[in-house]
Length: 457
Image (cartoon, rainbow, N blue to C red; front, side, top):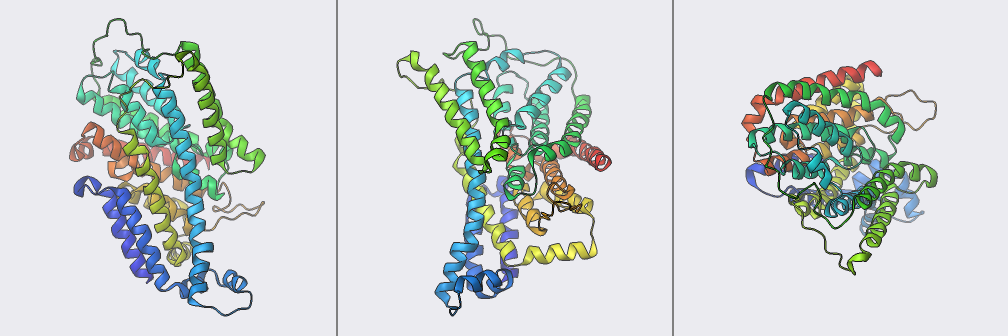
């Protein structure tokens, strides 16, 4: 049964990564695999429960006899729900942060960027757009950031070849910006929710390699840029603002959004409540301020229509169902004991976290990085001892390396991340062309960043 569960998930991961070939929505594959693996688990549930939860099950029985219905109830109430609750904590956080960005975007908060970024120097534009993406992605997940930045540059850069070059820089910058903060990506958010990291120590350990990776990639990418940026002609009477709000109102909402997002780790530290409650509080504040600013429009809360690439498809229900399906699938893989077996084997025969990171990074360039981070989190148990110097202790280098290498792996090939898939569909980038021109640049940037990580740790 364990081998069947592994086979089902492996086939599912391959189908999710090759979505562009067979055009089956990856969320569909993830949900089907998530349900099937737990059905298979239940067929042999007695052995799995006694293997992984023997003591808990005996306490649940309270001296009574084990029955088929009792076993199923235990699995449903005490095993599956653990992974559902963990997934929902991340999903609610993503819903709140994505909605915050969309509220600001629909009210023209980012309009001034379109006017400010209209510059002719192609290499300067590359660095500005890259560092801006890096900063935004540190606060919002990388998929949302990629969709937002592509929406912006599509209104600035007219030349499709130049736009593809900038799109590649946006992808790398978004992945690196997302991986170095606890709220920047769903993978790092999972580590935070699980208790493997704390936001401050995590950011301090990953910021140097992340920014170095971005700088090296941009330096190599700049070699392909010559001349000036071909921008769209200036529209008369357009000054980067076509919304109803004044500049101070937009600035107020932007400051509230940024400060609110950065306050979430402090909210969690002070209250010990789940991070998603902090993000929901920030969203409520943003919506309240938006409502006050819209009072002068006599209750008309219709937003200005924006060119925002398929936001509902990429960031809405598709992302939620995909993440939930993957969480269930990886949860079944962990509960059947397969990941524990692999973790014990790795500690016995490899015992080098850098090799783990390289292998997971390469795999995440082919398979999706989200399930690989989830699997990597379940390979080893978190050492919560206060005086522990273990690589698997809270804020140990394994957890940071796992996030960094999976983020870099997702940049090597577009199929390795949902942000890359979105980029591929938006810009219609040819896969072979990307491999020939940009794969080696991303690989070199990863290796340099990994060397920096090794030096500081």
